[in-house]
Image (cartoon, rainbow, N blue to C red; front, top):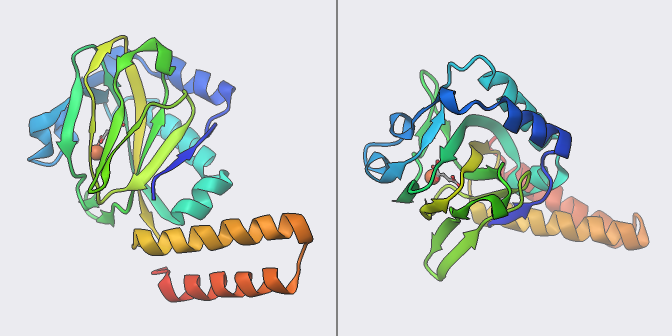
Length: 223
Ligand SMILES: O=C(O)CCC(=O)C(=O)O
Ligand SMILES: [Fe+2]
């Protein structure tokens, strides 16, 4: 399931993250890509060693933790990897698959990939994130502060930036529910029962959907 999550960051958080990013701390993005993704990755990214990098990552992780839509759609176990990427005119990231396992000594699975847009869409040309499905392609270019989450199992690319600067945070999450189809069933049930609760309160129907949701999560979660 691909899902757009509006307003992940408040405008204060967005301003603070963007104003802290200093272009002089960006280096060639090939260093963190798999051996085949390297061939098509043409961008720059924030040095992990930049003094403020951890703090910016924490701001974004906290914003995702408090976001109900992110929580029920992704069922995060751990947001284990995050990068800040900067694309100037002419830069792009060709079609690739993200590494299945990420980390240093300890490995985490990438179940869900996330792009948090940090630049206003009108400030740069091109730079769309394109998710390539068997049924066709879906293109995203979101407002600054909004995010798209999609299964890490998909081929995807970033179209060439034609003018301006595209700044994003990208992150990878290990989910409690590794199968995207199961995550979607849980998401639908959760959304439906919450809507029912809003309309009619804690009815027998609400309780039965809650029971099914909880029992499926019990069966499917690899906590
Ligand atoms: O910048 C994006 O929207 C996605 C980048 C990407 O696919 C990656 O870093 O693996
Ligand atoms: Fe990717």
